[in-house]
Amino acid sequence: MIKKFFLTVFLVLLCAAFLAGGFYYLKKYKNSKNALTVWTIQLKPAAAEIIEENISRFRQIHPQVKVIWVDIPIAEAQKRTLAAILGGNPPDLINLNPDFSLILAQRGALEYFSGEQGEKFIPSTLEMLKYEGKIFALPFYATSSITLYNKGVFDSCGYTQTPKSYEELVQIAQDLKNCSGIYPLAINLNENDSLAKILNKYGVNSFESEDEIKIAVFVYSMFNDLYKKNLISRDTLTINHREMSEKYMSKNAVFVVLGSNFLNMVKENAPGVYLQSDIYEQLKPESGKYDIALMNLVIPKYAKNKALAREFANLLTNTESQLKLAKLTNVIPANKEALEDEYFSQCKSDLGAKARCIGIEQLKNSGNRDFGVKNKKEINEAINKTAEKILLNPDITDKEIEKEVRALAKRIEELRA
Image (cartoon, rainbow, N blue to C red):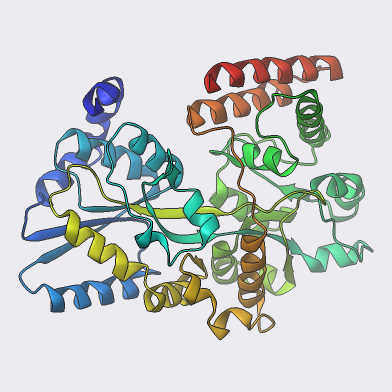
């Protein structure tokens, strides 16, 4: 079943994976009963200390077992995971995101975890990692976006009240650009599920009702208006999160909504901008829920050391490790007890501390609603493609925007069927 699912993907990705180094990794880190292989996604150098400490603890318990830690660039994670599974030699424990993990779970490629193993985690994070009621991954850490803005520029333009939603920002966007000469907002509408999350905040998660379709038309029209008036950059449909943050750091945008883990990058690479900056909660409508991003740990079905992998996953997610990970990287722990530490109630010393406390409050009121567990990637692609059709058509009318949204609703209905 698994190989049948991956057959098409195999033809496209296997060569690319091997040419990019996948074959080298599979050969060099060939798994065995005497070696626990752990893959993480881009945790070096920030989290290297805590990973290496856990490896040392694990070796004290299991001196006969060698722990091989491979930290993979985020752009190669899915490709190398596919190559490893197809090669029949996956690592024992992998750090992935929920969407890709879900695809693997749906195809029977992952081990499941018991309810008892999930008791130490924040319930809302664990709910994101269930398929047919079973836990296919353990939460590793979370991030919750904050609104970062150049307070110096904002104040100099005579504003005192920050916008709380995208539509409030739209209302002042033209005046803000006229005053500052820079984009009011840096945003990436076409990366992964960025636009889907914004639609979710506005109560759109199925496109099944007339109300949802009307709201979706409003959201698409709002960003179309910003794009046509040059109030968001022309590369809005192509940039990623890092490039979006670079626009803010180069003082080419007043506002940006991004993960709090990017704050250190701003501080290090644009200290002058950082000193002028302030933060507050995510832009969202008054009735909307905050969104969070989660990273998780999975055990492949054909891993050779499943019991050891569970043990190492428990080390990475215990209270001590989660607290240290948060302090090193400014992420939010998934472990409930770690969140009770006084570290998470100290909120006023700097932007990082403020972001930490804002993120935790947002986590408590999060509402990650998606468009169903089936065909999530294709649904996100359809949502993004609709944005391209609308924003890249210079003469599009309101009626044509509604037509595109209704066509999107029909396509999502087909994908959810």
